[in-house]
Length: 115
Length: 114
Image 1 (cartoon, rainbow over the protein chains, first blue to last red):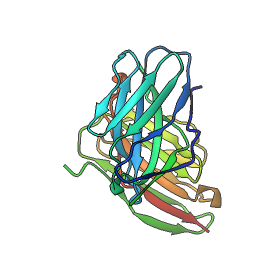
Image 2: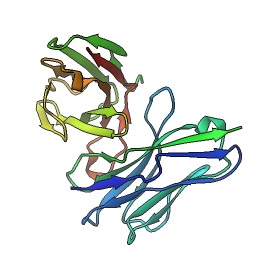
Image 3: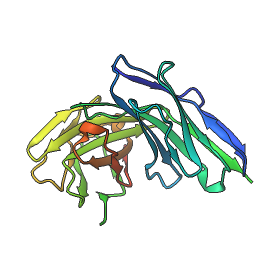
């Protein structure tokens, strides 16, 4: 079974600074997908970024980017120019490729952006 | 498009009562699923469906039933509620996820079982 580990239960950052959230995963598969979801206080789960394991290029979405290290099974999220609206719980998630439909989530990192 | 909708937003039950959590999507997604979120546990998959008439168990299926009679709806039934089922429940949907399709989540239902 796949596992996803987020080793930082809580983090904080000053507004406009950069922060990196860590995620490691365990799998013996070579075809899979990785996701970061954001959950603000409203509880709505919002997709932040998605990475295909077969792509070496790191995914980027505006101020959000990932550092995908396939050999190390590491998938960290970097948030640049942090904003107060980035305050949320962030979940790393794993999905195998092919006919497997299950998202496996980490336990989450609570990020607080301070003014 | 309304996306994924869930009702009710909040519910209080007594131990032993039954209820149905509703989930609907208007994006013509084949795949739908239910997760529960507990403090410090992340989200865990309860049941999922890859199309009308097809359902299967996830990681924590005990105490829950599902059915999928239409593409749009995927209700979750608690047969006899227990305090351990106090949680926040999320419904999600996507196109058939053979290529890592993004799953879209509903706003959640908070359930308290006394």
